[in-house]
Image (cartoon, rainbow, N blue to C red; front, top):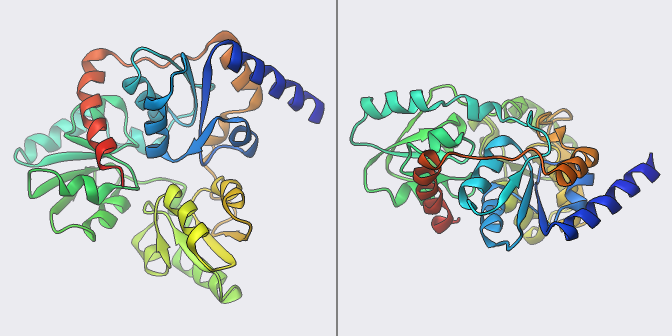
Length: 306
């Protein structure tokens, strides 16, 4: 098996050079995908990197909305995703039709959508944000009322950082992985590891935020472990980040839940990555009538950064 994986890595390296391709991988990807990627990061970092590359082909190892975002920002490049089934459940919770309903209900409000949405929804928004910069984006909206979706927990987190009225759309949007974390479980871990620092993702429930020492996106967690003096960290986000954190700094990283795993993120394998590069599949395309307004909204996110 090890020999087969090594052969796949050699083939991927060869194809990457031959086809002038760049491999982007999200922090939640399996270790072998993170290790072979040209760049590993969160949604905001990957969006930025997608705009900076001079590669002809972008292979995006993440879920569907991420590959869509790369395609929107790079209409002159071929964007591939190794497995078409790598879908984001949260993104499906806010279809374009529902955004239209809320816009009619609140005609004076601006619409800020989490990057974890499909392109058709982004096209109806005034701006897009990531978990690293929701408040920064909300603050630059020329309205005191902002419709924000699809993640309810991120909306609550953003509310605490701005004085504007933030209305969640829909009322039930959530990430299934981040819903597994419970306050009592983290408190038990904290009791067993009293010197550990608790880091929680903004997509976690507010009750988890209450017992966290640090709340931030995966990129901010990476920066946090480099800056902190703690030797142990309890990590409340998808467990794929732990591989990245070990590379950032040698310390003890304790998953806040043993099964905090996004199965869709884990669909990409070395075999699928190799086939994607070899056959240039599966190409992600966004019609320009959707891509153009979505691009304007995404560019607001890139300027706000966070």
